Image (cartoon, rainbow, N blue to C red; front, side, top):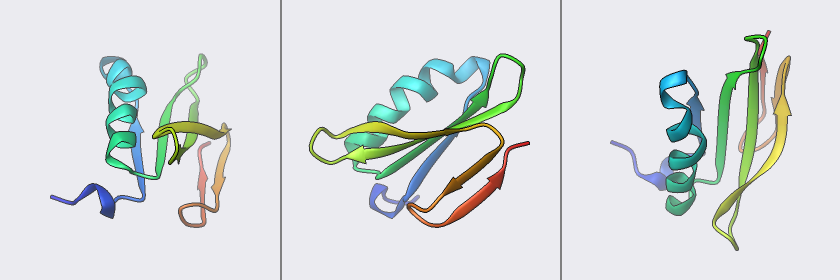
Length: 86
């Protein structure tokens, strides 16, 4: 088992059964644990993947959305990454 301090991005893939946990419960728990980045991947209305990238605000201990990506996820934090979502 890893410690929260070892996790750079927590990534959740949302399904119908996990929507509430992945959109509400888990981000609150990850933020409280101090995990600096949270990414959520789910389907849009047409079934295409969308990635939502959040960064922890240390003052509020809550995540703020830093980007939403529909075709290509490109991020430089917590590390450089490019992911083809198509």
